[in-house]
Length: 409
Image (cartoon, rainbow, N blue to C red):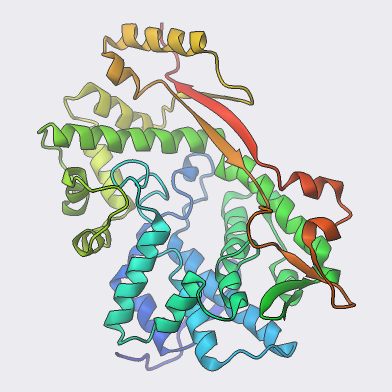
């Protein structure tokens, strides 16, 4: 493989200058599979709420590599032995952790490629790249999958206090302007430690972790689960489902080669073969936006109307509450929409729909965030904290929503 002939530096608005550490990382960044992430939005359609939220998965992945380097430097300063091979493999794992994301985050997973999770696709991409790079990603694969014998390396890549969350909270807070989500990254990294190859946080860092968990909760309610972002993504899912249904019925819709492939493909749930992976590597946000702009002129009323809803930002009304909506209320809205648009019951499903959303800042069932006391004792952050509200963050909060068109007579 080619190697860079000079030191590569990227100027990042969050961390300043980021140095690409070695030739393997550089070559992976240069690869077409990774370059696609420049065209995948980090926050989907959230820019319809927060106009600055146009940053990409590429931004995020590069930021993760930077703070992963700093995290491992801090651990080495505390006497944690990490070999050169482990360092490189961990950087590769965090660089590629989001490479399987499709256009607009999770919309594709819930529409034209149902049952195929982005983490599964990421794993397939890494396996393919490992073959292309002559097995040099083998250790990175083990760390990514959590099968390596030193768990803390996987925890740094994917855990409740990983470099993924540490970067996206700070980055998304910056680009949305939501100061409540801003976290002290340097302080978090400085408080990390390792005991028995498990990732720990030193006792004096507990308040920083409390702030991290509270920031995560606030970012979910105020940004990631913001009602306008939520309804926009749900409409996009409906757009793609309608387009796929029309294609399967014989309609010829204008679409890029990559998008057209998935509209036509009758994919068995959970199966993503090599051909699908290669086509997926050419699919990005621009395919979806271009298609929706074209579909605004289509004869099909449902597809045309849904696309205009997003392109013109004339989004449906969304109501959210704790208790499920009454059947009578849902039926009234369905009857109103059916009569106004003169459409079938099946078509009404695209305009009036319900669902649930959940928020859980800290999961007790997952690998815990452990606090390492001065006496060497290991305590879960919930038990170690004197914040009564912190325990509440481990509870799953579920809310119900209904979406339906506005301003219909």
